[in-house]
Length: 69
Image (cartoon, rainbow, N blue to C red; front, side, top):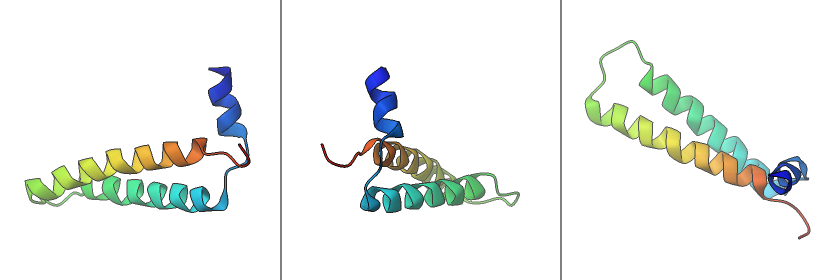
């Protein structure tokens, strides 16, 4: 557990910072689609759910990438 916390707090490479930002933006889009007050087709809601999971994984993996190892 200590090692994971050290990795999360270590400097993140520039490329992974961009990926993390993209992941967070995709999470915001998918949340907006899933919580839309209008009736959307079921396939759109399903894709938004998958997008939310994928963006969460992308952001988490990008956050644990470190420089210089």
